[in-house]
Image 1 (cartoon, helix red, strand yellow):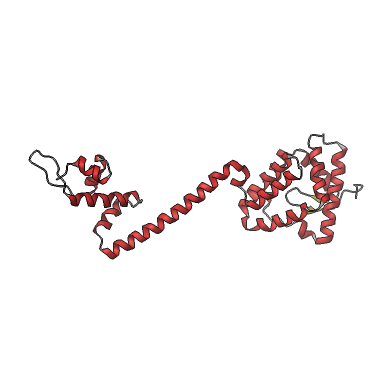
Image 2: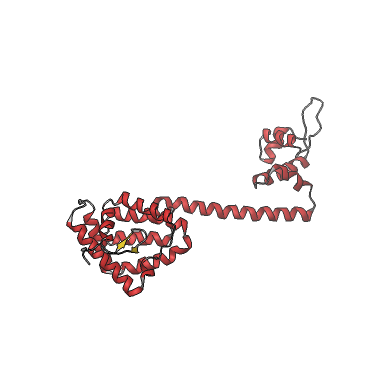
Length: 262
């Protein structure tokens, strides 16, 4: 016959846990000796180990009692169900660990891999980090809003980055970031960008240029993020509008201002 301390030790639990299982009705109260102390037999050790094993597996205590009273087939089915649930929890925890591990790489936590690859390519091309950050901040809400469209958008972005003229535009914009709104370099940049966009629209259609197709509030949010990071972008858009195009996140053709550089 075992004392409660010995029982707890053999089963690998605390005395407090044994008393808790008594209170929940999972472990029957044993008889007491002449001194009034509980005394347990070997069967209690086995029952307590079963309770501990089920509880550690995440089975609610309310169901532990049901399983202990279940027949062999019912118990086997319940254990199989618990095992499936545990496997799903393991998969979820593995995904959480992967996300936490990606914290060190920054962008990877909140952006799809293809967008991270695109941002890294901008950096490798020597694009100013402020422009890269503006792109990143825009892609975060866009990828969250329409994740299924990201692969198509990124394929187009990669294609565009193969055009040296667009890369040169990015590099020139980086050089103009710290210049005043009336700096002639911004005017020249607007000329280059308008010509580039017009050429793409003429060769591939305006749908190729304007394929974002998202709600105006989200467009406004993304434009605001870009203008906060790259203030000169707002002035650039004003100049661009005079040349027949408007918008940062969502490009649209408009009537050019008379007298503007074609």
